Amino acid sequence: MMNCLVTFATPQLKKIHSGKVRDSIRIDDQTRMIVVTDRLSAFDFVLKTPIPHKGAVLNGIANFWFEKTQAVIGNHFLRMIDPNMTLVKEAMPIRVEMVVRGYLTGSMWRGYQEGKREFSGAPAPEGMTKNQKFPQPIITPTTKEKSDREMSPAELGKEGFVDEQTYQQMEKAALQLFEFGTKLLAEKGIILVDTKYEFGLLEGKLILIDEIHTPDSSRFWRAEDYAQNPGNAEQIDKEYVRQWLLHNKIDGQYSLMLPEDVVKETSRRYLEIYKLITGKSLDVDEHEPIKARMCRNLVREGLLKDSYVAIVMGSPSDLDHCKKIQSYIQKYEIMTDLRVISAHKNGEEIVKLAQEYNDSIEPGAVIAVAGRSNGLGGALAANLNLPVINCPPFKDNVDMLVNVNSSLMMPSQTPAVTVIHPDNAAYAAMRSLNLYRLRETFNQEIDVMKTALINADKEVRK
Image 1 (cartoon, helix red, strand yellow):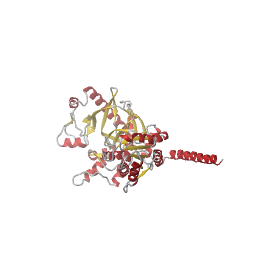
Image 2 (cartoon, helix red, strand yellow):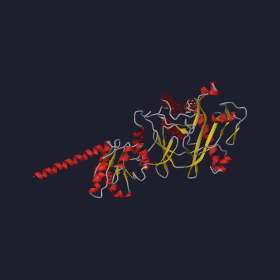
Image 3 (cartoon, one colour):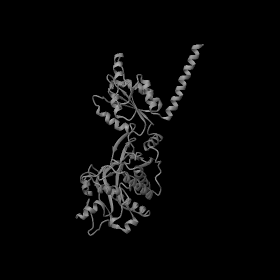
Image 4 (cartoon, helix red, strand yellow):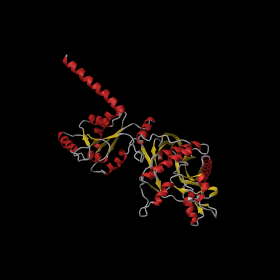
């Protein structure tokens, strides 16, 4: 349960967007990184319980299909750099989901039972039964908004979601992708029941984006199960969780937490469908912490430094003091992140900062720089799971006595230490990172320092 990716955070890269399952990270103007977490959404909300391996399964399956469908339509896929992370081309998304349905089931069946015969402008034949196959797949587009809406192609154009020519290209591509997926999955004994596709524009050209034929975006049945019991074929996707939520409401409300046995079974099902679709087992080390692995892979790609030291100042007037501290850190290939937060004037920003730093995938340390009565270091230490080191700036000896006293007298559960000199603050922060490459470097520096002292002693004794 603990080795799950719930959120992606780092002060070294900018997060563009955080969706229900995916986080989008800016790399440069042409490239973004998609991080697929282990979060699970159902009935339009995100559960508090993550599912082990889910993110890696979704990422791996989507990339499997991106590579397989290149001949049908181009897509944004560049390369996978970690089981949970993929680099993609930056495209302008079209705010329409193309939902392709091969069978009458799910919400469409519920509407059909109530007498509805038109869905997003697409007609459904009379006299159909639950889970019956359509003569031809139909498309029921929806908008991508806070609350998605079914909308006909004409309405989409009228409201400015997509022009007619682009929509026709999307419709053609969606049907071709559905046909391709249907045939490939049929060879594996799986029925592609329905799915959604999302598209974007890259240099004016339509491409496929987001995900494709995953258990989160699609509905699957086993062909054998459907043949034996078409009206009640079991879905091999996240429907298992939806059904558990439906049958375990509390006072009419869905539970946000899943019990351990449901989590394990859900994870097993995701791993199973990964193997069914790709033909191989998911290759991840279950015992290695996910964030440590992600950090290592991002460092290998040159997209991240292996650690950071955040220098948080209480006022812009402390900048020169902070830059002095920063100068001691920069030669060690450690990222420094300078922030301005006043514990007294905008202390609410500390909570936001803590959410980012506490979830960071790489090791970090924080140096607090604030004058007078230093409340900043204590406020940071009370909210952060990282080492916090106070290094106050001083105007004179009186200021030093007042500040050091307040910095040392921290309340319980606020483990901020205090260092006077900027160089020692920098070294204390870096040593607290406990990186093997830095420990070796510091060993060498200690040896140099000791050798210099021994040589100086010999000179004095001559």
